Length: 155
Image (cartoon, rainbow, N blue to C red; front, side, top):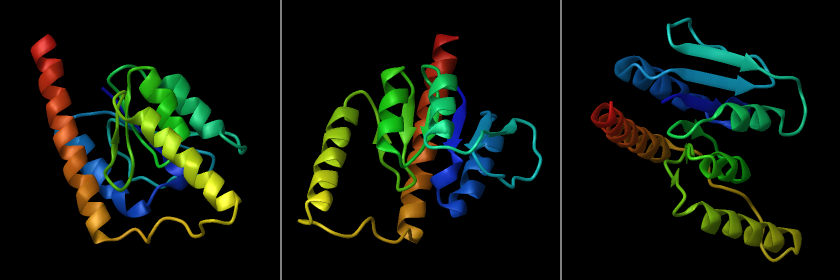
């Protein structure tokens, strides 16, 4: 299992959570972005900088993700792409996307976009806060421990 981070649009405050989890559980971590990402050097952590452009980082993550991998992203279309390949996606607020729920989430995203475009709804997500960060950390930990147990049982 590897963890890929859509690093162009994720809250920097969860970077430390991801790095600690990666080191504690020995799970490779890869930041993918079209701008420089600052991460203190550590074994098992890589950074892929892609050229600027719409969806270039998303395309690279979708290309690299394999079944069982985890992608950290708030981008629901990217989550759909990796879940379709058998990977999982976790948004920075702690929502885990799986084959059981990704299509519903994608449909809701489309509905909200239509409502915003039609002027029937305004605004975006609430400010990222300590509760979101804690929910993310808890969900990440539970997911990684469960997946590592499954991998060890199948080895």
